[in-house]
Image (cartoon, rainbow over all chains, first blue to last red; front, side, top):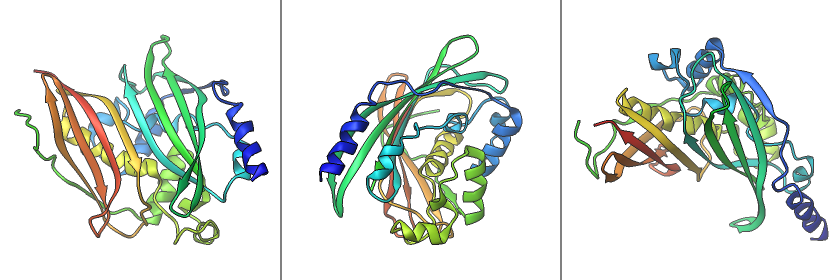
Amino acid sequence: MSTTTSVIDRLRGRIGVDGPEVTAPVEAGHVKRFAEAIGDPNPRWNKEVPPTFLVALAPVSLHLAEAEEYGKGWLNGGNRFEYLVPVLVGDVITARGHVADVYEKAGASGNLLFIIFETEYTNQRGDLVARLRGTMIRR
Amino acid sequence: MKVEVGQELPELLKHPTTRQLVQYAGAQGDFYEIHYDQAYAKTVALPGVILHGLLKAAFLGQLVTDWLGDRRKLVTFEVSYRGVDMPGHPYRCRGRISNVDGENVEVEVWGEDESGKRTTVGTATVLIDG
Protein backbone atom coordinates (compact mmCIF):
# COMPACT_ATOMS: atom_id res chain seq x y z
CA MET A 1 0.00 0.00 0.00
CA SER A 2 2.89 2.38 0.74
CA THR A 3 4.17 1.94 -2.84
CA THR A 4 0.69 2.75 -4.18
CA THR A 5 0.42 5.79 -1.96
CA SER A 6 3.77 7.09 -3.11
CA VAL A 7 2.83 6.60 -6.79
CA ILE A 8 -0.31 8.65 -6.22
CA ASP A 9 1.63 11.32 -4.30
CA ARG A 10 4.23 11.57 -7.06
CA LEU A 11 1.49 11.82 -9.71
CA ARG A 12 -0.37 14.44 -7.69
CA GLY A 13 2.82 16.45 -7.79
CA ARG A 14 2.34 16.70 -11.58
CA ILE A 15 -1.07 18.39 -11.32
CA GLY A 16 -1.06 21.73 -13.14
CA VAL A 17 2.42 21.26 -14.60
CA ASP A 18 2.34 21.87 -18.37
CA GLY A 19 3.46 19.05 -20.65
CA PRO A 20 5.45 19.62 -23.84
CA GLU A 21 3.71 21.81 -26.40
CA VAL A 22 2.96 20.07 -29.70
CA THR A 23 2.39 21.95 -32.97
CA ALA A 24 1.07 20.14 -36.03
CA PRO A 25 -0.49 21.10 -39.36
CA VAL A 26 -3.97 19.84 -40.24
CA GLU A 27 -3.14 17.98 -43.44
CA ALA A 28 -5.83 16.99 -45.96
CA GLY A 29 -4.35 13.50 -46.29
CA HIS A 30 -4.34 12.94 -42.53
CA VAL A 31 -7.95 14.09 -42.17
CA LYS A 32 -8.91 11.79 -45.09
CA ARG A 33 -7.15 8.79 -43.47
CA PHE A 34 -8.83 9.57 -40.16
CA ALA A 35 -12.30 9.87 -41.75
CA GLU A 36 -11.70 6.58 -43.59
CA ALA A 37 -10.55 4.89 -40.38
CA ILE A 38 -13.71 5.89 -38.52
CA GLY A 39 -15.82 5.04 -41.59
CA ASP A 40 -17.34 8.49 -41.97
CA PRO A 41 -17.76 9.44 -45.68
CA ASN A 42 -19.18 12.94 -45.04
CA PRO A 43 -17.76 15.26 -47.79
CA ARG A 44 -17.62 17.99 -45.14
CA TRP A 45 -14.34 16.39 -43.95
CA ASN A 46 -12.61 17.54 -47.14
CA LYS A 47 -12.41 21.01 -45.60
CA GLU A 48 -13.19 20.67 -41.90
CA VAL A 49 -12.19 18.08 -39.32
CA PRO A 50 -14.51 15.49 -37.69
CA PRO A 51 -15.45 16.15 -34.02
CA THR A 52 -12.78 13.87 -32.52
CA PHE A 53 -9.95 14.56 -35.02
CA LEU A 54 -7.89 16.73 -32.66
CA VAL A 55 -6.87 13.61 -30.73
CA ALA A 56 -4.88 12.56 -33.80
CA LEU A 57 -2.81 15.76 -33.88
CA ALA A 58 -1.09 15.43 -30.52
CA PRO A 59 -1.00 12.84 -27.73
CA VAL A 60 -4.14 13.15 -25.59
CA SER A 61 -2.29 12.26 -22.40
CA LEU A 62 1.18 13.00 -21.10
CA HIS A 63 3.49 10.04 -20.74
CA LEU A 64 3.58 9.36 -17.01
CA ALA A 65 6.01 6.51 -16.41
CA GLU A 66 5.20 6.40 -12.69
CA ALA A 67 1.51 5.73 -13.44
CA GLU A 68 2.53 2.41 -14.97
CA GLU A 69 3.71 1.22 -11.57
CA TYR A 70 0.00 1.14 -10.65
CA GLY A 71 -2.15 -1.75 -11.91
CA LYS A 72 -1.74 -3.65 -15.16
CA GLY A 73 -3.17 -1.52 -17.91
CA TRP A 74 -4.82 1.67 -19.10
CA LEU A 75 -8.48 2.19 -19.88
CA ASN A 76 -10.04 5.30 -21.32
CA GLY A 77 -12.80 6.49 -18.97
CA GLY A 78 -14.21 9.32 -21.04
CA ASN A 79 -13.60 12.42 -23.14
CA ARG A 80 -15.17 15.84 -23.27
CA PHE A 81 -14.65 18.18 -26.21
CA GLU A 82 -15.57 21.83 -26.29
CA TYR A 83 -15.57 23.53 -29.70
CA LEU A 84 -14.93 27.26 -29.99
CA VAL A 85 -13.66 27.87 -33.53
CA PRO A 86 -13.94 25.45 -36.49
CA VAL A 87 -10.70 23.61 -37.31
CA LEU A 88 -10.04 23.59 -41.06
CA VAL A 89 -7.65 21.73 -43.31
CA GLY A 90 -4.57 23.96 -43.62
CA ASP A 91 -4.70 25.22 -40.03
CA VAL A 92 -1.67 24.78 -37.80
CA ILE A 93 -2.72 23.67 -34.35
CA THR A 94 -0.77 23.87 -31.11
CA ALA A 95 -1.80 21.57 -28.25
CA ARG A 96 -0.91 22.33 -24.64
CA GLY A 97 -1.76 19.69 -22.07
CA HIS A 98 -1.51 19.20 -18.34
CA VAL A 99 -2.63 16.83 -15.60
CA ALA A 100 -5.74 18.31 -13.98
CA ASP A 101 -6.40 15.75 -11.26
CA VAL A 102 -5.29 12.37 -9.87
CA TYR A 103 -7.33 10.23 -7.49
CA GLU A 104 -7.98 6.64 -6.49
CA LYS A 105 -11.44 5.08 -6.37
CA ALA A 106 -12.75 1.65 -5.38
CA GLY A 107 -14.00 -0.32 -8.40
CA ALA A 108 -15.98 -3.58 -8.64
CA SER A 109 -12.76 -5.64 -8.82
CA GLY A 110 -10.26 -3.59 -6.83
CA ASN A 111 -9.02 -0.02 -6.70
CA LEU A 112 -8.61 2.12 -9.78
CA LEU A 113 -6.42 5.15 -10.39
CA PHE A 114 -8.00 8.05 -12.27
CA ILE A 115 -5.89 10.64 -14.06
CA ILE A 116 -7.62 13.64 -15.62
CA PHE A 117 -5.84 15.33 -18.53
CA GLU A 118 -6.78 18.68 -20.04
CA THR A 119 -5.61 19.95 -23.41
CA GLU A 120 -6.14 23.33 -25.03
CA TYR A 121 -5.79 23.73 -28.78
CA THR A 122 -4.97 27.02 -30.50
CA ASN A 123 -4.66 27.78 -34.21
CA GLN A 124 -2.03 29.71 -36.18
CA ARG A 125 -3.79 33.00 -35.32
CA GLY A 126 -3.61 32.26 -31.61
CA ASP A 127 -7.37 31.59 -31.31
CA LEU A 128 -8.38 29.00 -28.77
CA VAL A 129 -10.21 26.52 -31.01
CA ALA A 130 -11.07 23.65 -28.67
CA ARG A 131 -10.59 22.12 -25.26
CA LEU A 132 -10.41 18.44 -24.39
CA ARG A 133 -10.76 16.82 -21.00
CA GLY A 134 -9.92 13.13 -20.77
CA THR A 135 -10.14 10.58 -17.98
CA MET A 136 -7.55 7.81 -18.10
CA ILE A 137 -7.82 4.88 -15.71
CA ARG A 138 -5.12 2.49 -14.46
CA ARG A 139 -6.56 -0.88 -13.49
CA MET B 1 -36.66 21.54 -39.25
CA LYS B 2 -38.60 20.95 -36.05
CA VAL B 3 -36.59 19.95 -33.01
CA GLU B 4 -38.44 18.51 -30.01
CA VAL B 5 -37.52 16.78 -26.79
CA GLY B 6 -37.81 13.02 -27.20
CA GLN B 7 -37.12 13.10 -30.96
CA GLU B 8 -34.65 10.37 -31.97
CA LEU B 9 -31.69 10.82 -34.30
CA PRO B 10 -31.46 8.47 -37.29
CA GLU B 11 -29.60 5.44 -36.00
CA LEU B 12 -26.05 4.64 -37.20
CA LEU B 13 -25.00 0.99 -37.32
CA LYS B 14 -21.25 0.28 -37.39
CA HIS B 15 -19.48 -3.00 -38.09
CA PRO B 16 -16.02 -2.59 -36.56
CA THR B 17 -13.34 -5.13 -37.52
CA THR B 18 -9.82 -5.76 -36.22
CA ARG B 19 -8.63 -4.30 -39.53
CA GLN B 20 -10.50 -1.07 -38.70
CA LEU B 21 -8.85 -0.94 -35.26
CA VAL B 22 -5.42 -1.13 -36.92
CA GLN B 23 -6.47 1.55 -39.41
CA TYR B 24 -7.71 3.74 -36.55
CA ALA B 25 -4.57 3.12 -34.46
CA GLY B 26 -2.52 4.44 -37.40
CA ALA B 27 -4.77 7.44 -38.08
CA GLN B 28 -4.88 8.51 -34.44
CA GLY B 29 -1.33 7.45 -33.60
CA ASP B 30 -2.48 5.35 -30.62
CA PHE B 31 -0.49 2.13 -30.74
CA TYR B 32 -1.55 0.67 -27.39
CA GLU B 33 -1.40 -3.10 -28.02
CA ILE B 34 -4.82 -3.89 -26.50
CA HIS B 35 -6.36 -2.70 -29.77
CA TYR B 36 -4.58 -5.13 -32.16
CA ASP B 37 -2.50 -7.74 -30.27
CA GLN B 38 -4.75 -10.58 -29.00
CA ALA B 39 -2.05 -12.17 -26.83
CA TYR B 40 -1.14 -8.85 -25.21
CA ALA B 41 -4.81 -8.00 -24.55
CA LYS B 42 -5.17 -11.28 -22.63
CA THR B 43 -2.14 -10.50 -20.44
CA VAL B 44 -3.99 -7.43 -19.13
CA ALA B 45 -7.11 -9.46 -18.32
CA LEU B 46 -9.15 -8.44 -21.38
CA PRO B 47 -11.13 -11.07 -23.33
CA GLY B 48 -9.27 -10.05 -26.53
CA VAL B 49 -8.59 -6.88 -28.48
CA ILE B 50 -11.10 -4.11 -27.81
CA LEU B 51 -12.31 -1.02 -29.63
CA HIS B 52 -10.58 2.28 -28.84
CA GLY B 53 -12.85 4.40 -26.66
CA LEU B 54 -12.11 7.28 -29.00
CA LEU B 55 -13.20 5.21 -32.01
CA LYS B 56 -16.58 4.71 -30.32
CA ALA B 57 -16.60 8.47 -29.63
CA ALA B 58 -15.92 9.08 -33.33
CA PHE B 59 -18.87 6.82 -34.25
CA LEU B 60 -21.13 8.85 -31.94
CA GLY B 61 -19.64 12.05 -33.36
CA GLN B 62 -20.68 10.86 -36.83
CA LEU B 63 -24.19 10.08 -35.54
CA VAL B 64 -24.46 13.70 -34.43
CA THR B 65 -22.82 15.43 -37.42
CA ASP B 66 -24.88 13.32 -39.90
CA TRP B 67 -27.97 14.67 -38.16
CA LEU B 68 -26.62 18.23 -37.81
CA GLY B 69 -26.12 19.02 -41.46
CA ASP B 70 -24.75 22.48 -42.22
CA ARG B 71 -27.19 24.64 -40.31
CA ARG B 72 -26.27 23.55 -36.80
CA LYS B 73 -23.09 23.83 -34.82
CA LEU B 74 -21.65 21.33 -32.38
CA VAL B 75 -20.72 23.13 -29.14
CA THR B 76 -19.73 20.35 -26.74
CA PHE B 77 -19.44 16.59 -27.07
CA GLU B 78 -18.89 14.37 -24.08
CA VAL B 79 -18.66 10.59 -23.85
CA SER B 80 -18.11 8.15 -21.05
CA TYR B 81 -16.97 4.58 -21.68
CA ARG B 82 -18.89 2.09 -19.56
CA GLY B 83 -17.89 -1.22 -21.08
CA VAL B 84 -15.52 -2.82 -23.56
CA ASP B 85 -16.51 -3.76 -27.11
CA MET B 86 -14.90 -6.32 -29.36
CA PRO B 87 -14.43 -6.14 -33.14
CA GLY B 88 -16.60 -8.50 -35.19
CA HIS B 89 -19.77 -7.38 -33.46
CA PRO B 90 -22.16 -4.67 -34.66
CA TYR B 91 -22.17 -1.39 -32.76
CA ARG B 92 -25.40 0.58 -32.77
CA CYS B 93 -25.21 4.36 -32.26
CA ARG B 94 -28.34 6.13 -31.13
CA GLY B 95 -29.40 9.53 -29.86
CA ARG B 96 -32.39 11.41 -28.56
CA ILE B 97 -33.04 15.11 -27.96
CA SER B 98 -33.08 15.61 -24.22
CA ASN B 99 -33.50 19.38 -23.89
CA VAL B 100 -34.40 22.38 -26.06
CA ASP B 101 -33.79 25.91 -24.81
CA GLY B 102 -34.22 28.37 -27.65
CA GLU B 103 -31.33 27.77 -30.05
CA ASN B 104 -29.52 25.49 -27.59
CA VAL B 105 -30.30 21.83 -27.99
CA GLU B 106 -28.98 18.97 -25.89
CA VAL B 107 -28.78 15.49 -27.36
CA GLU B 108 -28.29 12.34 -25.33
CA VAL B 109 -26.19 9.83 -27.33
CA TRP B 110 -25.20 6.26 -26.69
CA GLY B 111 -23.62 3.20 -28.29
CA GLU B 112 -25.14 -0.23 -27.79
CA ASP B 113 -23.60 -3.65 -28.16
CA GLU B 114 -25.52 -6.63 -29.63
CA SER B 115 -27.29 -7.32 -26.34
CA GLY B 116 -28.54 -3.73 -26.13
CA LYS B 117 -26.13 -2.81 -23.34
CA ARG B 118 -25.08 0.88 -23.48
CA THR B 119 -21.30 0.60 -23.39
CA THR B 120 -20.75 4.28 -24.27
CA VAL B 121 -22.99 7.10 -23.13
CA GLY B 122 -22.68 10.80 -23.75
CA THR B 123 -24.15 14.19 -24.45
CA ALA B 124 -23.78 16.62 -27.33
CA THR B 125 -24.84 20.25 -27.15
CA VAL B 126 -25.73 21.93 -30.38
CA LEU B 127 -26.57 25.44 -31.51
CA ILE B 128 -29.33 25.48 -34.11
CA ASP B 129 -29.37 28.34 -36.55
CA GLY B 130 -32.96 29.53 -36.89
